Length: 150
Image (tube, rainbow, N blue to C red):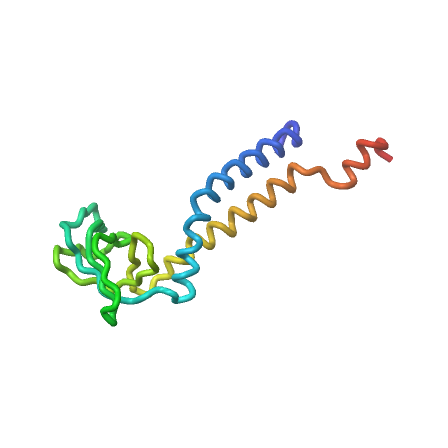
């Protein structure tokens, strides 16, 4: 870095801190669902597409359907599927999903969708610690301010 390294340090620290706080507000509410999916606490079942899916390029999304658990004990109407589907589903199609009790069900396709909120939270936590480290003066610098450099 050129110029005044201290001012760059403050800009980087405040930018990193602000961005990590914003990302935390987005990622932290997703963690309970992510942990339920990671720990296999959901119920597997079938999602029946009840509307005409909205498709863009290579993915489709359906926002209305019915979930029925494999053992038939749970039936939920009006749930949506959480992620975009690569194959275009049609009204009446059946899709294997996992339900964790949210407004959404999650495709049971083996992809670790639970991993992303956890990784994002860990990375932003690291950015927060780094930003605070840049903002907080070291013990030597605090001592030098009080007594003057040796």
